Each structure stands twice: as C-alpha cells, then as structure tokens.
Length: 451
Ligand SMILES: [Ca+2]
Ligand SMILES: [Ca+2]
Image 1: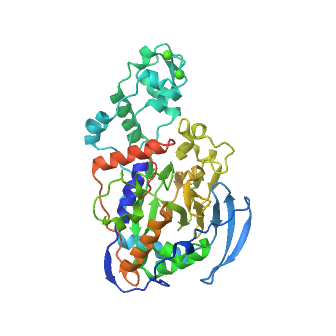
Image 2: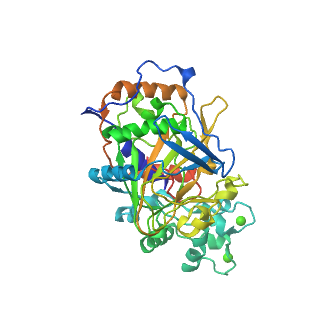
Image 3: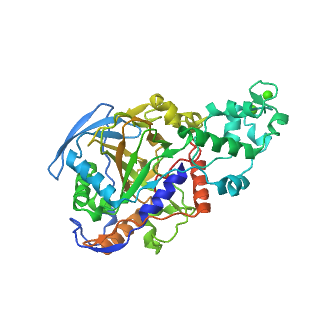
C-alpha cells in the first residue's frame, strides 16, 4: 500500500510554471521570519465537542470533534453543493485518471519480486522461541507482496492448501517450516488478489489538480487557512489536490498519509529547493511524505458503504506490536465496522485530522500512529472525495526556504497542473518495501498515498 502512496506523491509533485494569469491571493514575498511561523492546531477538547467558527472568508462552520487521538474533526457543509460539483468537473475535465492499484504483471510473477525476497529462517521466525512457528509468526515471516491485503485470517488457508502443517496442530515445527516454498506464497497471494478484489490494497481512480489552475481552488486555500489557523503562505505551498473516485467494491485499506521522521530521507514536497525538479524521477529512498494534516472533502453522498475508518483512533492501547499484529485491523473490506471510528460520507463535509504530533517547540513532530485510516468498501453507488494535504517539512528551516521558493516561483504566477509520471518498477518496489516495513498493518498499501 505504501508504494501506492509513493507513486501518487510522485505524480503530484511535479509542478511547472505556466502562463496562466490568475492571481494567488495575499502573497507576501518578503523573507519569512522563522520566529513568526507557527503551526496552529485545532484543540479537540473532547469527543462530541462542537465549536462554531466564523471563517474570514465569510462562511460560518461548526467543527465537531470525532476523536482526540488523532485530533480529528468533522465539518459539515464546508463545501456547498455547487463547489463539490465544480471540483468534480475540474477532475473530469482533466481526464487523467490513474488507477491506483493494479494486479501484479506477469513480469512480476515470474521475475524479480520472487527473487527479491526469501522466507526468513526458522530461528528468526520463531519470535517467542518455543521451537514452533505459529500462524502469527508465519504472518510476520512472509515476504511482503506489493498491494496485497493478507492478514492472519488468511494464513490457515495457505498452510492447509499446501499441507505444510502435516500434523494439523496449527503451528509449524522446523521440519514443517523448512518445506515452505516462498514462490508459492507469491502465487497464492496473486491468485487471491485476482479472485477477490478485497485482497487488493486499493481500488480507486484519482487525478491531481493544481489549485492555481482554478480560481475557486485558489480561494479555497484562504478558507482552509482560516479553518486551520495555518498561515496562508504555508497552505499555498502545500501539494496539489487529489480527487478520487471509487466504484462498487472500491476501497483503500488502512494506511498512513505521512511518514515517520527519518533524517536519511528528506521531505518530498520541499525537494525542489535542492534543485530536484518534479519531472525528474524521484528516489524514494531519499524522500518521504510529510503531511502535517489531511483535509478530506466528500464531494458526493454514497448510497451505501464507503465510510472512512480509523481502526485505532482513541485506542487505549498504544503498543504497535499489539495494534498491528496480524494486520486484520487494516483490512477494511472485512473489518470496517470493527474500527474505533467510522466517518460516514456526506456531500460537502470536510474531515480534518493531524497525521503528526506537535513538538514542544511548536513544530511538526513524529507521525501520530493513531492516524491510521482508510476507505471501506463501496457497497452501493459511487464515492467521490478530494484530499487536500497540508504539507510541512519536519525541518522548519527547509519549510521556510521552500515557501520562499514557491512564492518566488509561483507567487502571482500560476503553476500548471502536475505532470503525471510513471515510476520505474524497481523504484516502486523499493518504495513499497519501505512502506511495508514502516507500516505493519498492510502488506504494501501503505502510504503513500499518494504521493
Ligand atoms: Ca513460536
Ligand atoms: Ca504442525
């Protein structure tokens, strides 16, 4: 899943200057003073708490707290009907929909993916050192398969299919374990993905839309700045909007929109200040997603299903080992209703949550593990959403340099919509692997959502 994110990120990152003549509002091109730049954050107070806010843009909204961890808010009628339709029409006109998840290609099946991974050895797989590899230990020991949603609940089927558990005691001795052919894990997983769309990490279509390509989207940034309290200059320099639609059976298993701080990999959205252009293939080993907050808009009602689920929001247990063991909480096709928080789609409603904690110095901190979330299966109808990610570099100085760069490059000028781009297969794999390692809940889905 993660890899999907990465791919998407790549796509949107690409911003080229263009000749459009719309004006970006309220941009000051003076150098930004580090001390003046703060990251505001809405206070959730308590679940069910409501606060009414008169936005500077004139609209009055009611912000209802849906969770405290992560701080998560529902804002009904943040967009009106015509605004939802407008955003959908922009996406339709762009007509550059990209399918987020595709089944492994033949080259994957016969080629490098199988060669890349091996089953870890028995001693390592036997985590609790009882001389057996139980099904959960086997689930951890498996090599990850890109875009697959395989949970502990699937393991008995695999073991029985190939008769690896000879004595039927639901655990594997070293002798039983050593018979496992890693290629069969791939074959079985691919077959499951083909036969059952629920086993695919994500099934949706999306398109990237640059705010500066549309006067309403430019104005929307001011509304968002007023809602969040974040500086307009920061909102302006955030990534383009991603419009997504899902048909029946569409879903996006649980993942993170952002990533853990890792000094070896810089934030992808600020990469341009290093002279790395968006249209150059990106090295995901070098870059990560830095999305301080997610603002998601529902652009339509869904007849049935399509909820946004937060499996561990406000969970009392914080142990990642416990939360992600077996991966089933992230399987929203089968466990949507088990999520601690399920938000129902409603046209015009915005959902805001923070993917990162705030450091004592008031700057973006590490990833908030409670922000794990995804989209449940659409049962009936179509789901339309737009993701408005509010990106912030974990290094404040880089964020400021990027905002200055953005304003000098695009202030008063309008960047073109991002150029979509295909990643190289190997790069995707690497990214996916990284994401998988970071996100225990899903095989490959994680993150990236998009980049
Ligand atoms: Ca064991
Ligand atoms: Ca056995």
